[in-house]
Image (cartoon, rainbow, N blue to C red; front, side):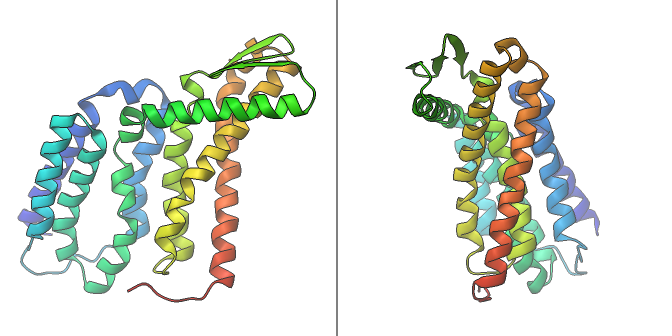
Length: 269
């Protein structure tokens, strides 16, 4: 690794710090921070061992231009998602040219991880969180109605047998979505790497994350009825989130493993 490479890495680190610290609302809890901080190390670990070829540094000018446009648009629109795409474009414009053709072809399947290493889901995902909460509350109300409970439902507020349950922003599922996407990309890379169906499997992660969050709301509502609202709002609330993530991680593993076993082993170009 020459001086140019070190300068590029320092610049990428500084740009990542700018994106991370320009709005620190995502650092409100460990649950928000941990998935984001894990994503880049996963990219490095799964893509390794990295074999930087001993040749002059050549940048992909198209990606550099795209990164500059995305960065300007992200700053102007205050959208961290565009900044995450910009950072990934800058990083790949350098790294792709430093790798062998074969390693670059493999590493591109990991590019969603650098995008997910930026806090755009927490900062830009208010609409997604609202939909997760609203739909989860509606399904929970419907399920308890089917079980002959007395249910009143108004938006994200549910009253079941006189027990008030409010699906607050903490139940929006954005942490679950971030964790599921990162874990799902890693699993898909390990089990489906270079398969033609790799990319469309990533789209499955969003409904799986929604399902995980809805199950969590149902479980929390049942716990509130069985014990109390105070019990649910305590440690059990956080534990239920991590438990559901673990369950859905295993579900993803099963889905990908079955595809790996039964679907044609056609390689992507």
